Amino acid sequence: MFSLNGTSFTNNSLSGVSRCLTQSSRRVSAPMVVVAAVSSNGKPGDGSVSVLVENALTESAAPVEMEVKSTVTGGVQDVYGEDSATEDQSITPWTLSVASGFSLLRNPHYNKGLAFSERERDTHYLCGLLPPVVISHDLQVKKMMNSIRKYDVPLQRYMAMMDLQEMNERLFYKLLIDNVEELLPIVYTPTVGEACQKYGSIFRRPQGLFISLKEKGKIHEVLKNWPEKKIQVIVVTDGERILGLGDLGCQGMGIPVGKLSLYTALGGIRPSACLPVTIDVGTNNENLLNDEFYIGLRQRRATGQEYAELLDEFMYAVKQNYGEKVLIQFEDFANHNAFDLLAKYGTSHLVFNDDIQGTASVVLAGLMAALNLVGGSLSEHTFLFLGAGEAGTGIAELIALEMSKQTGIPLEETRKKIWMVDSKGLIVKSRMEMLQHFKRPWAHDHEPVQELVNAVKSIKPTVLIGSSGAGRTFTKEVVQAMATFNEKPIIFALSNPTSQSECTAEEAYSWSEGRAIFASGSPFAPVEYNGKVYASGQANNAYIFPGFGLGLIISGAIRVHDDMLLVASEALAEQVSQENFEKGLIYPPFSNIRKISAHIAAKVAAKAYELGLATRLPQPKDLVAYAESCMYSPAYRSYR
Image (cartoon, rainbow, N blue to C red):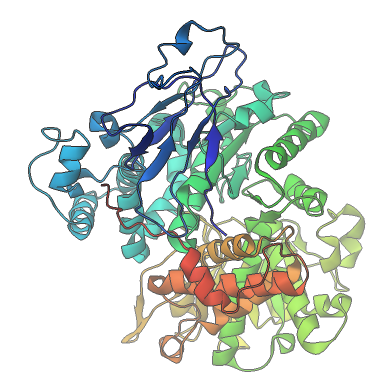
């Protein structure tokens, strides 16, 4: 559950206290910012000031209570610390200040811009700092959308959104929630890919923690530098495999920032509970190493023991700082690290890899929905993948698990319905000795096949899935081959960004004569073919991970289980309406994403309770309603 409980700060003196303070029991109106001064040894001070901050679950507008206790005898309290200032102190005392005036306008957590009422402007020293007009939250959204739409270049829109997030947090999230279908491609894929490529040039201010090899041995202390202490979700990357763009090193920070924006907008996780992290171990990208604007370590990537020790220190520092139930999402790690990290920490931490598990869950949901259009059960279909990395093998494994669950057939047998093509051709048993461990379950008896089109003609799959990161690999010959032996070929071109998609929506529909059931990783505009308009689906992980994370948090889950991924897929597939099917869609519209996330969260939480992995007891009776009640709202609070 979301709870920002009162955090005790102790203090022998207070400074910067505004006129809101009165006599012995002092009342300070929200908003407030607590600033901690530290001693030369970097440790926070001790004292006796208790501060109750915003409870995110109830979104209460009650004023903040602050009890000031003096250490000086007598009837007069030492409000300004004048008496205690001469006393021997081993540390610099904590300092508390109330945000008001210009500092309030610079605080993105509390700034409302022109939506501050006249009373709020008078109370919080804002008169004269703002134009006299007072406008509504909705009008602010309309104004911002009008401004953003004037930018023709997607990266300019991205930068405008990031500037807004740093200026007015609640307006940013209301804007994103109210216009999710239009802005999702801006704050995340495909635009975030370009933002990462140019991150060194557009970097303005820190939006997350950068932990490099220089911080080895002191990561626990570095985590304490982050201003928020009640962290519930961390998205971490080492930047080695950013989307389909390769090694972007430290500039991969755009991915954790974007993912966590969606955790809040789509899944209702408090912004203050989210922490983006980039682990900088260097980069093997020569262009970045030679770029004067590159912001990361200028060295080749650390590997082996040095890499493992840094990651190990980070993982245990996170648990030490934030507890057992903090969700750590691995993002865009290269294959050789992604599987190992998930296996290593899956039994000791609450970890989730969106590239492996999130992609698998959203694709499985699309396949389950597609069965309503093509008929048959999952086990009656044959699957061929182009790409056998994190995404491909993760999707394949979840499909095999679902088939095993539905039919009772052993997992080893259901895997035989799934074939894979990698850079060396069809994965077959004669290649077993040369295969990486995560590819070996997919090596079946078959003669070697080098080309994808020949594999399609030989295997005759009903479902073709691309997760290769290689653009335009589903050629006209490949799509036409799929259409020759399938009335409705299912084709998923999942690679991101758009430039790396295995084929476009227009190509899939035209080459299959309008018969394909198509979905992609990045969005494509509707396609008109022979007088009919085809709206393709987007197999976007954003359907799954926000609700999945919310379900883990509201149940207090301590581990992720495969069955949670299966129920998340089922919950998403259930949200596809008959109206959607009539349009050829196999995913619901993003306009309903918060309700979809609540349903996914409820199913995931219920499974956590069923498996004995939940710690928040007792279990709520109506988990959907409970999930919705826990979701962050970007509505402005009234400051009195």
